Length: 284
Length: 142
Image (cartoon, rainbow over all chains, first blue to last red; front, top):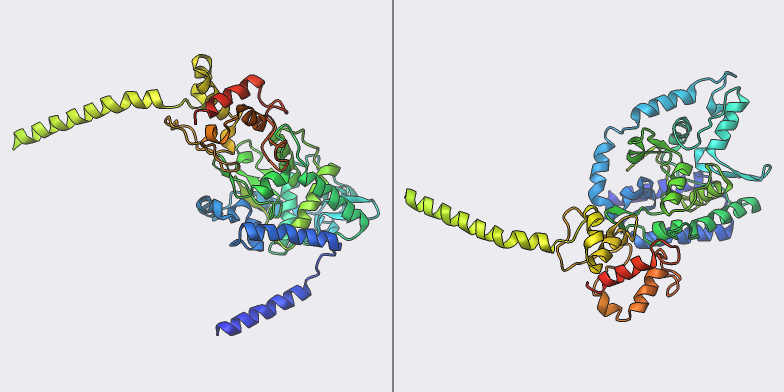
């Protein structure tokens, strides 16, 4: 019996992977992604690749507090807002079309490099273009509120599907390299790189707080944070979080949708190839 | 019977009283100041306590963010224990018999080890020269 189940699941896995269109990746990039993920496999042997969608909650060092988070998830605090966001996503714009009409690319393929405009395109940029094209005002605030909620309504439709961005054209590889450089470069008065905390020290404690692993980062965004909820703005985009991180190491943050943050977002998407999306997420 | 109860109660109270007389003064004298108490203590305290205060204050050394510390004096109840991003601060006098070496580590740890993730407290002016000296005085005592 057990054997049959095993064979069947192996078969399902095979079919699944052959049916899935895997990301087109430059061989060097592909090798670096494998190395990055292997590091975490070694550091946290009990955590599977898909577990990382749960962010810091996936780490054994966080086990005690995970129970609290699971209780919270029985009635997630973002439920009412998500209902509003879904309604907004389906509401016809002035042209009569819905936002969905602009998105033929799945959320698992965002961000992407646009060879014509020679830039990294994020959901934020495409969403605002879509609004303009259909007679609506673009959303000004790229950090919290409506923009974050609409992205959540789009991305959640791909929950459970592995992230899978394309990095094959020279432009895309260059953007990946720029993001990689940002990730591994020390910055700010405190002199920390992203990697210093979230790769080298992942799972370690900063006073009582556990440092999350870089693997899994942004798979759950937009995020609904308790810390931000206390200030009345619970929702945040990836770039809002990047700004906060930069401030914490006492560096001047870049603007949301700046070249720097879009490249970083692209790099983080790349190193999370294969990790399933799980949107929205609740974090402290 | 009633008398026995009374005697033992008196005896118990006496033991409790004696116990409290012994422990209470010791506890208050031996407990290190927490971050809030440090604001006052920093003016009058000796250099070792001043150094401790620079080390635990978040906008100063914030050493406890990354380092666990074992102190001989009692740890303040209101102060959370240190993290484990960096190595624990134990036997510092034995590990750094040369004060200059310890100072160089705090000033800029990336000189001795480019892979170090410790913020360069001197080089980036996170702490003043005087504050680094105070931390060293405290570190010599643990």
